[in-house]
Length: 324
Image 1 (cartoon, one colour):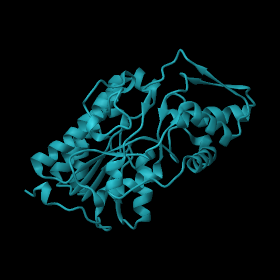
Image 2 (tube, one colour):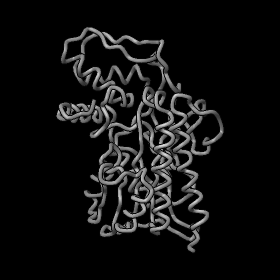
Image 3 (cartoon, one colour):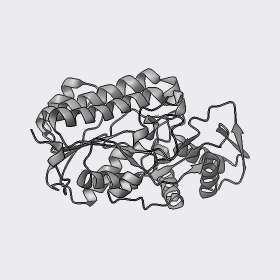
Image 4 (tube, helix red, strand yellow):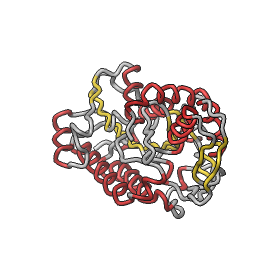
C-alpha cells in the first residue's frame, strides 16, 4: 500500500480513462468542457437515465467495465432554500447513496485520483468570516440546508477515511455559490442567482413594474463562475494532495440586494424591487477563505459582471428548453 505522504501531485495522463460523474450538470459539464480543452481523450460519463448512481449494483458494474484511472464526483441532488427546506429526506438520502456507491466502487476499481465536490454549506451557520477549512464541524449548521450539508460532510469524511485505510490520493473541494451556463433555472429548484436571472428577465420581457425577492437582501454571498470552478478542479488534481478539503471561491462577496441590482441591470429591468421579509434569509454571510487554494497556485479569473452577462446570454438562448 502506498503511503499518501510519499505522493507528489503531477500532471494527469491525457489518454487515461476519466469518469466525470454528473457530467451533464452545471459543474460536471463545465469540468467536461475544461478537460476536453486540455486534451483529455478518455472522458466517459453516463446520464442519470443511463446510470442511476443510487443503484449500487449498477454503479459497481459500470466501474468494473469502464475501469477509470481518474474520477470527479460532481453528481448530486442540489437545490435552493425552498427545495432543501421542503425535501430534506431526499437531499440527505439520495446524496448519501450517490456518494457511497461511487466512492466504494472507486475503491474496488483502484481509482488513482478522485476529486469529491461538496458545497460551502458544510460550514457552521455562524462560522467566523472568511470561513477557513478548519471551521468544519465546529458549530451548528444552517437549518434550511442541514440535510444536504450532512451528506456532503459525510463525503469529506469518507475521502479522509479512504486515504487512511487504503492510502489513496483522493481529495475534496468545497466550492462557493456557483453560476454559469447549464445552471438550473427552475423556479422551484434553482439557487439564488439563476432564480434572480429568470425572475428579472421575465419581468423585463413582460413589462412588470415590480419584482419581489425573498428575505431582506442583506445576506452576503460569494459567487464563482462554473468555468473557474472547472479550472480549479483540474489544478487541484494536478497540484494538491491532502486530507483536508480545499475551499474554492473568489475571496470576495456581495449582498443579495447588490447582486439583484446587478442582474436587473444586465437583463434590462427598469422597475422596482421589493423584498418579502417574511421569507428566510438563510446564512447571514458565507465568504470562503481561499488562501489554501492560492497557496496551491490558483486564483479565479472571471469577474462577476462578465460572468453574469455570459450566463444571461446562455439562459436566453436556452430558455425554451429549460426545465420548469
